[in-house]
Image 1 (spheres, one colour):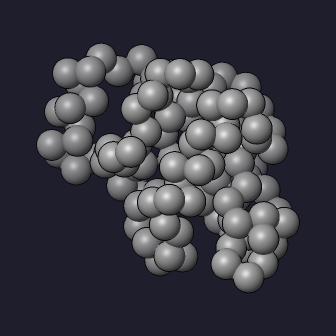
Image 2: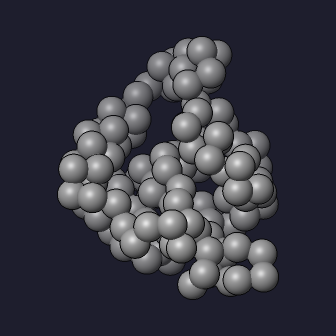
Length: 122
């Protein structure tokens, strides 16, 4: 499975000091069916633990995902900062999932070169 993070996710994750290992663990769990919510249309919500606070006091990641194929980390927020994403955001992420999950490998490689997404090496 190829794992990516969007440019906006990277900025937020870097600010919160979320590690590559934490992302790879979360991606593996989602691929095995372990996640907090299937929001429909290829959009999932997954908890990522915060050091010293565990998963319940940690982060919520919004993922665009197709089993065994590809996963995109799209957005992350601290549970202490907000409860959830809005219905409009959910619709927007479903639109994004349709696009991102439909890209060809050539399109993905072009977006990597442009800096719009980054592939997480396993």
